[in-house]
Image 1 (cartoon, rainbow, N blue to C red):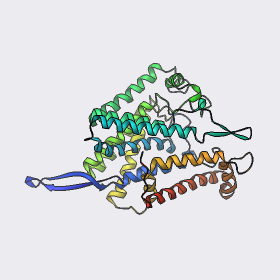
Image 2 (cartoon, rainbow, N blue to C red):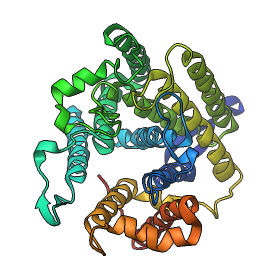
Image 3 (cartoon, one colour):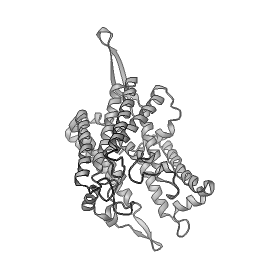
Image 4 (tube, one colour):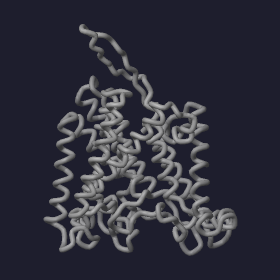
Amino acid sequence: MISYNSYLGELPNNQIICIVTASQRFLSLDVFRGLTVAAMILVNNPGSWEYVYGPLEHAKWHGCTPTDLVFPFFLFAVGNAMSFAMKKYADAGNAAVIRKIMTRTLLIFGIGLLLNWFPFVKWSDGQLVGKSLSNLRILGVFPRIALCYGAAAFIVHYLKDKGAFVAACIILLAYWFILVAFGGSDPYSLEGYAGLPLDKLILGENHMYKGEGVPFDPEGILSTLPAICNVIFGYLAGKFIQEKGKTYEMLARLLIMGCILIFAALCWNIVFPINKKIWTSSYVLYTVGIALLLLSILMYIIEFRAYTKWTTFFTVFGKNPLFIYVLSGVVVKLYLLIRPVPGQNMYTWLYQTVFQPIGGNMVGSFLFALFHVCAFAAIGYWMDKKKIYVRV
């Protein structure tokens, strides 16, 4: 549980000072993180990819759907958590900080590689054969989380808060320049995207995602640069919340900054389109702005109005976020491996046998995803009751 304490003391002339320490709770940050993990599971697990409601699909290219908010929200939440963790590193010494950051970065990246390779076997001509490493996708969601966390942590450690903000602004502008200077005639298209030849050169086509029908990685090397800024801005928001405490000034400034960033993003969108798949700089501002608005709403409801009875469902995700997300990926991949009837995997069989008869194609597909959100919530609830928290 992310938390802090405040001590109020009087200075001469009746001035009041608030010293923030580490035990007064920020339940809203746990809820934000848990809501994000639950949404990731929901959008990743429809019963059939042919039957998905529009808001639960990614934008085809330019634009932003609710689903396109989920991953940047998670990176923003990583930054929030980092704002608390970095305080613990302060007295550890430079070498210890570097070791902690590198260890966590490599561990998360390694988990991502294993998840990409899992379950290590596949069906071929009616029998299970080993999956070749020659086609292993190197990047993806977890590797991006690792790289963004590691880069943001080093930036914050060495440049401090103001330096990190300046660095984020420079990264966003530099990314825009790189796309225009080194991209094709349409630098914001798939074919003209400057990061595509870079990924092919360094990763190789066999190790890239092919969801667009061609080798193209939406978590590619170049587009990781602006994604680092989502973590940095999440860190800065977390630091600001801790410093200001539970005050209406803090809430108002979060809300105003969110509106400013959304407005700036929509203006920038005119010349630099909001696009998740190449993670444009306008997309960063847009998603951070919406994250700040959502966090402001959650803080008002939870911290200021004390409406907390509904939060347990989401906090159980927020207390074991990476573990539950990994577990959801493992379960789905096992579904695809298990064949309850010849020629049909468990994923398809479960949808067509249980959920499609209940709700038809669209509703049944949604119920399949919702069932898995609830199932992993139950696992998270059990882990919380047993005080089992898996930290990476």
